[in-house]
Amino acid sequence: MQDEPYGGLDYSSLTGFAINPLNRLSERRHEPKVIEAFRALPNAKTLVLAGEIPVLRCTGNGYEAEFTFMEARTIGPARETAFLGLYGEDPIFATLIEHEIPENSQAGDDITRIDLRSIATQGLVAPPVLGALSQAKSLMYWHKRHRYCSNCGNMTIVSSAGWKRDCPYCQAAHFPRTDPVVIMLVRFGDLCLLGRQPSFIKGMYSCLAGFLEAGETIEDAVRRETLEEAGIKVGKVSYLASQPWPFPASLMIGCVADALEDKIGIDEQELEDARWFSREEVRQMLGKTHPAGLSCPPQLAIANLLIRFWASNELV
Image (cartoon, rainbow, N blue to C red; front, side, top):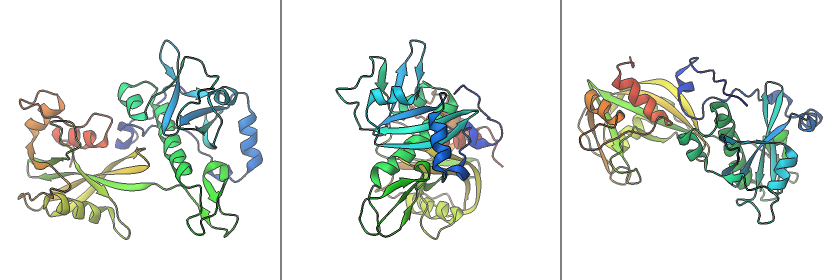
């Protein structure tokens, strides 16, 4: 796949992992003969994941993530295979092998495992490839952990080109899951609220975030999480953009929220610190010129998009 991003259609396309122009052909997944015909084409390619780590080929001029099925077999035996979609006329699949490349692998010295976050932050592959790797990683994560039926406990079988697992015993059908997460730029006048968790790198502050719960709207999840984590009541909530986040299989739903008060009371089980920042201070953080060495998440993350848009007065 070449670098043919479709950025500019929406804000989401400005985030990492979001550019994925594959035609998923979801309406053909239930036709095994069609999928097998795609797989048999000489231009069919597969992405390979060793457990949760993508496998790449070092070409000397960069890295490639696509392999023929014959090449993939030399890396390691396939545990699962799924059809991701068509890139133009080229069928693209995903193949899961063991979490380590087997010692008896016939792959050459140019084959290596690199975690997806590093691939993204270092720009090792083109944006469409990164998006497809994100899709593959999340899907294979699901397969690896859902081999047994949650209803009766028996082994399931793969169907629908890798997008479904069926239980032959109780007839239950299981589908890949995506966990929705709200992430919000909370503002109060000319200030924005950022917090940090103990796990963050030193000096980094980011938007608040949390998982959407059952029976909850996006807006109410934003209000609940902001109140729980920072003790701030929120009124109006607006959607801005979303981002696939394959760590392991989430969808980040980026929102802008208007605070009704400015007194902070953090939940110390969730946050190490939270405070209000001015636009000037945030611009320093984005530009890595903050006098105290404070920073924001990298451009890969949707938090960076939310913070940048607020700092440049692009949020209404």
